[in-house]
Image (cartoon, rainbow, N blue to C red; front, side, top):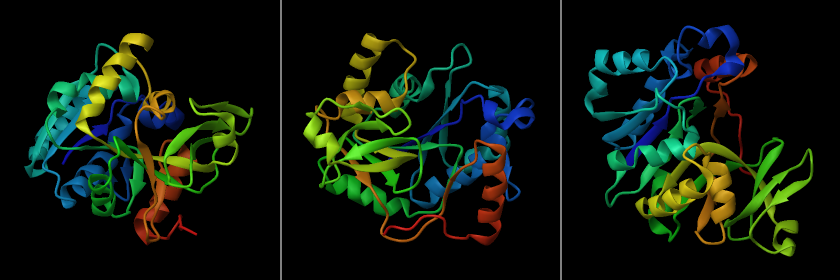
Length: 256
């Protein structure tokens, strides 16, 4: 299995912290988030990784080089000319990722310790084009899943807006789960991404792509069997909480 790490974001919610460094190199527990994610992927047996760059791109490229690419093959997808968001960024990296193997996609700002191998095995045993880490946790925007954990839509609970290619009765009874910023895609999804990009432009997010294509593609949610930690370090208050997790490894998510 190959992997892609999204490390191109501006990190604007972190304010002054990311004015002089990329969010991917923000430290948690004394270690840059990018290192934490790379080593997590490496520990899961992944030896080929693509990292996209935009904000303070040279800092990330120099960091990877200075650390001898952590002993594995790490390629850089350069978005310095234009930040392409998650979907556009994944599509631009297509030539670095194409092959027969699935691709594990991980946001650089997600600190989590769930078992990646469990997720990888679940994806490879299924007929899914995408497998998404999801959890029953508070958020304002939820993905919607049927009783077989197939994605059927999206809902904004603040506005009650629902988006889905399925009939209304499916979304009304669907389970609402929050996306965790880690997903696995099959390589044949690139043709759908390319068609979506032609329709919507080269800059687009994976979430609306999944929403539009969830009737055409098999997209399933994945919930780890064991208790695990998860946090998005993208806000100052989250960064403080992440330090506590890194130092004490206190559980933050449970599967009920």
